[in-house]
Image (tube, rainbow, N blue to C red; front, side):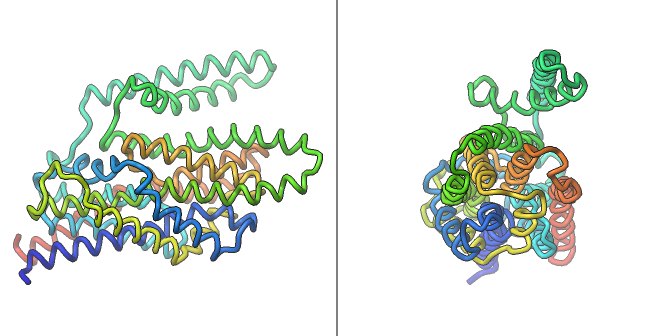
Length: 397
């Protein structure tokens, strides 16, 4: 067996190990609320979620894998060695954060790892940066959405005689966040690649917050009018199981594709398949199995942080958070945007908590997580870039 074959096999193994790490960190979010409300025993919740996560890639499209494999760094510079090193930065960052119980985005760690290795190997031109036109239109749409949202909410503030400033700021934020996803749904604006990934670092948690807030508000009114709240509470505990399974399946449909994108890129770089080849079934199956096994291993520190570290969750709120998270993740997967389950889940849990007032959310824990999110892409890029430069000095490639 020659050195190149060994590197290819090692790259595939590391890609699967990355998905396993993803399961221990990101995927753990899908069971946090169902465990926090004691709707299911921890081991049972993880087992059900693992099965649903395994099914995810077979339910959704493989658009995310194509973004990872071909939409961030020029595939022309890919070699098995470069992809192997790109994975190193991502795996080290995700596992370090998992060790300390910090929920981060494995998807964004992978993006950072690929960017760092690509920049080190091919310079700034190796990365597919967004075009000025696409960037300009994105800013314009965000600004229009913010203005429209601020105007609408100001009108509501006048009608209900509430704080103009608060409603204007809230409306501007909501308007900006909703505009791009709405235009994508209506097929009026196409955004992909690196710009979509970076933009949705902000959009996905806020979108999760908004969807969860609306959903929880409706459920709160249902609970308030219920004649038998205890029975309703038990019903929502059962419904939470469905919500958790849906969120786990949508996670499998999005995050499991990270390893698929890397493996197909390795196979293309090695000349085993062509650039326009479809994903082989064995790649889909192994990638899904790896993330499901990672979830099955239990990322307990992350589960605790998400389940009780942000806000106190009741069964109907847990159901709302899980269903909202599943809907947002399904939307992102449909458009091929690799997003973080951590970001979405944090947003949905915050949204359900805010319905009881802003004081119900532990903002200190949220700030810690947001800091880790911001650092993820540059940190993983720095690690993989340094690894590539050191390897080039040592081995001379």
